[in-house]
Image 1 (cartoon, rainbow, N blue to C red):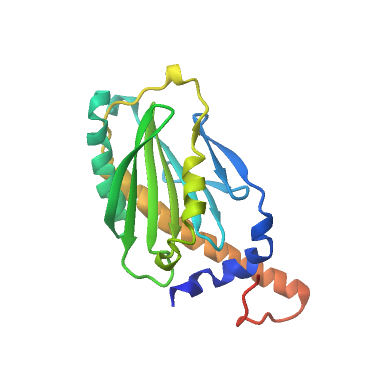
Image 2: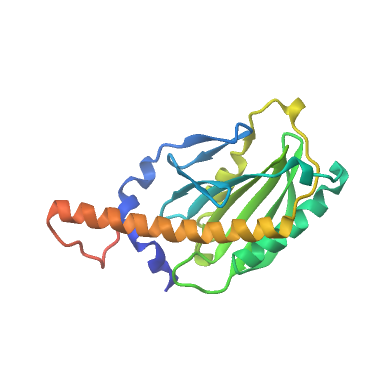
Length: 225
């Protein structure tokens, strides 16, 4: 069962899931996004990765600056900018596009997608993303979980996605111009896979340390509530 992917996360996070303290995180001095708890931040391949993982799924925001000289399209061609990024994202995450739709936040347009990946016992197969270009920064908000948890995690996903708020002066923000979107999408997809795997390893290490301090072996057959 794919459920065992989150066994360690349940053990580590289960006792405080209902007591989580939402954390509003600034992203690139352009927007804010609210995570269930304070996220970790790292830099990978020119991308700033902001991530939090719990038993519900993986919450991630990736922002990448794009060379202004590569941004050459007009605002009415914004959809053409997103299309190759989506194709690259789907390939980079080894997924299949299920749905694509537009969304707006404070008048600025983005794309939301739902993808399903081939079965992998080490990774969630149901993956959602929202992509939005603001000035020369591409911001991708991601929520990954298991297919069988689609309904159970819907509220958490929508809360996370809808928390996106533009904090910069909107009169200074533009949406236009065109980098090699396909390559960017591939990079983002691969970064998400690595972020998930690294997160799981980190949780396992913390659990081992915690168990050693307590001086007893946990019962792996039970889940924390």
